Length: 122
Image 1 (tube, rainbow, N blue to C red):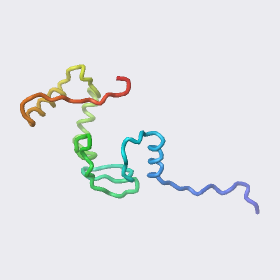
Image 2 (spheres, one colour; image 1 turned 45 degrees about the horizontal axis):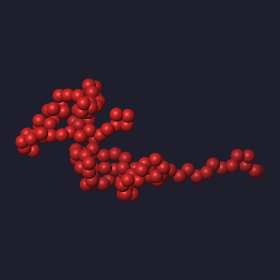
Image 3 (cartoon, one colour; image 1 turned 120 degrees about the vertical axis):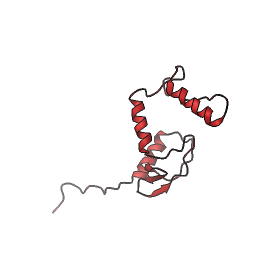
Image 4 (cartoon, rainbow, N blue to C red; image 1 turned 180 degrees about the vertical axis):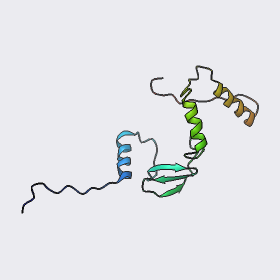
């Protein structure tokens, strides 16, 4: 007997390939990227979309190496987001002053400058 509806195409789900294609279409190629698509992290370890675990030795490239999914840091971020999410350098902010004070205490006499990334529209 003849099929009225043709068989559906085989389902091929390649999450890494789909994410890489998303980048190729939408992200400027300013960096050469490793052929790894990360999904999550915990402490100094990260996992890719296929579940393979890696030791994250790339932490600290343009950011502080604080690890991933740290419960204490997450809690502090939640608490801060309930007060202020972003304060421009055009205004005084107690937390920024305290951070600068601590940096000076740790590094030595002088002053600090905290660079903020500009958001689109600022």
